[in-house]
Length: 264
Image (cartoon, rainbow, N blue to C red; front, side):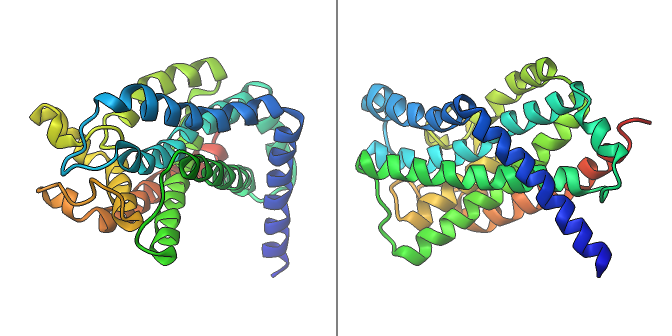
C-alpha cells in the first residue's frame, strides 16, 4: 500500500511540474489552442464554400467533429517535442537518478497532457458553437462522443511519448512530426472518403482517426454520419473504441520499457 501511495505521489509530482511549465510558457499554450480555431476558420469559411457534404447539409456541421479529432491527434507533435526536449536537456537522466517509481515520469506526462487536451477540446467545442455547430442527439450522446475523443487522445499520447523517447531531440521530433502530418490529414475529417480516389478513400476509411470522426458525427447527430457503405464506415462507434485500445496496448508498454532503458 505504501508503495502505491508513493507511486501516486511521484506521478502527481511530475504532473504538477509539467502543468507549471505551461504557466511559465503561456505562448506555447496559446499556440496549441489557436491551432484548431485557425482550422475552424480556414476550412469553415475559406475552403468550406467549395466542399460537398454527401447527402447534403451544412459543411460546418460536417466539419466540426473532424476538427475535434484533429485537436486530439495533433497533440502527438506537442507530446513528442516536450519528451524529446527533456531528454536533450538531461531532465530525464535527472529523474532516473531519483528514487521514483519507474513509470511515474511517463505516466505524469500523460496525465498533464490529458488535462491540457481536455481544456483544448472544451475551447474548440466553444468555438464550434460560436460558428453555428451544435449536437442534435441529446446531452448523453454528446458526452459519449467527448469520451471517445479523449480516449483517442489517450492513445495518441502514448504514441507521442514513445516517439519522443526514440528520437531524443526536439529537432528530430519536428522532422518525425512532419512525416506523420499527412497520416493525420488522410481521414474523413474534412472530405468524405467516397469523394476521394478509390485507393485514397480506402486508406482514409481505415485510418483510425476516421473511425472517431464517424463516431463523433453519429453521436453528435451531425451530417455525414451515415453515408459510408463499407464495414469500417458503418461500425464507426465500435472501431472508435477498438483502435485507441489497440494503440494504447502497443505503445504504453513500449514507452515504459523505452524509458527504463534510456541510459543503457
